Image (tube, rainbow, N blue to C red):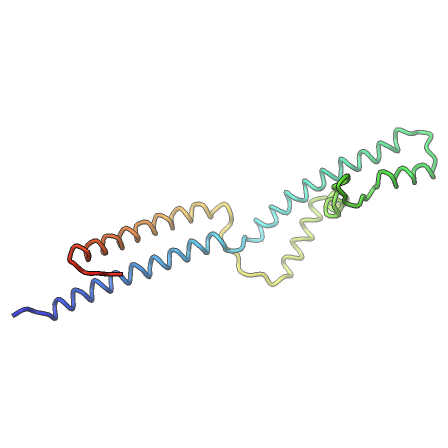
Length: 172
């Protein structure tokens, strides 16, 4: 006599294994999304702010040097002429197409990158921010490991589906 219970048991085991692999694929896919889209840690954000602040400070320092040299190289300049010179050169210029120095560059130039970044760090610490993910330096390695895991799981799923197809089963 044909044992339908063992067929049923084998089909259930197959279905359970396939479902388990698919759940794992979904889990690893979500982990990959988490690594890709999780917020950066404060240290990474502050490092980017430091780069920005240093660049802004350098640009403002170059402008400030022009303003100061404009006064220094005019030994006969009067107080009224200094005022007009500073008005024309704009010690704190408004950003425009001809003068692209922005207010943030002025702050970075006058207070220095260290002070600006420290202030930003203080403000960030006071904020209720979402939990950070991995640091930028670690994300590529984590993604590589997760992609390898996902590839193995997808190969397992493909093998299970190929086995089912060979047996004449339609599995979706």
